Image (tube, rainbow, N blue to C red; front, side):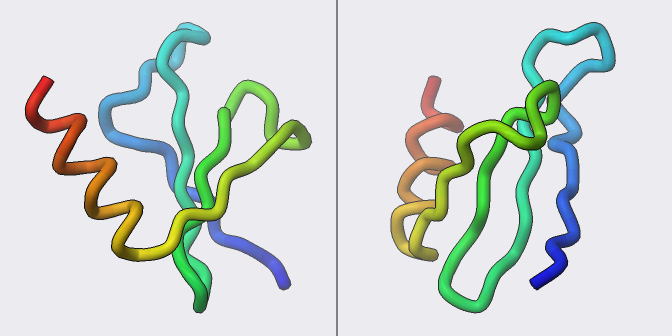
Length: 58
């Protein structure tokens, strides 16, 4: 399955905070855009919403 990875609008182009997301039927894929072949996370929709809620509080 070919994924359409999108970089977060909060990521910079200087090698800093680089997060990419991809929608999947079972959840949301998360990876480091500086290492696209490296490890990836797959978060269930409820876990992804919880993560976003927690990040927005910081």
